[in-house]
Image (cartoon, rainbow, N blue to C red):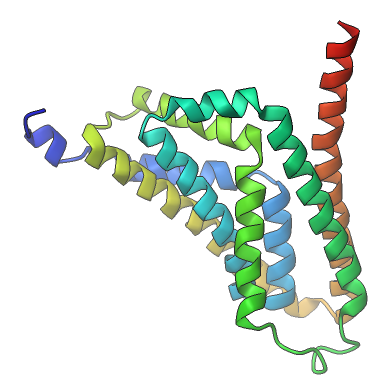
Amino acid sequence: MPFTADLAIPNPLIVPVGVLVGLAVSAPVGPVNVLCIQRALQRGVAGGIAAGLGAVLGDGLIALAAAMGIGAITTMVNHYRLVIQGVGGLVLVAFGIVLCRGRQQIATTREDASPAGVLDYASDVPKAFFMTVTNPGAVLGLFAIFGGIGSFVEVRGPVGALMLVASIIAGSLMWWTMLSVLVAHISDRFDVLNIGRINLIAGLALIGFGLVLLGEIVIVVARSAAG
């Protein structure tokens, strides 16, 4: 393909559109939002951002696959949707149980509680990443959004596509940063007892999300068997 100015100069509207898409796919209340809020309350801004970073990487990977036109991924997700959804549901239930049990391990005072280490923050990144990429609805939804962006803004060549991916990542990171800062700002209003209750609520919420995914699988299988 000959080199042209259209390929060299991406459409400037790609950036704001991509940022809005990143915000839109991150903002709806879901498992990662629950984890981010819980971590920001317990560990501050860095804890919330660490949890959100996994979702940022997941969204970026999905957007990159969509930008590269890897239609096989959409086919695979559709074909193995129940398997992927089942794994995601079990993961959410497991993380939820860990959070519920974690409320019993909180120190009686904030002063006695040992600060979180680097490994504590880093361990949340793969958790959130796994929550994101094992959610078939999120994967297919981002593919659909990515495909429909052409109706709003022209994406010229691979440079424009990569700029769109980067903008989506930026929008996603912006959401998790704003959410973490907001939640951490009000965390001082919560004492240790309330933090323990929040851990319990967050854990039960994750378990609930997981059970919904698993319950949908049971319904689909039952309908297939009945049909």
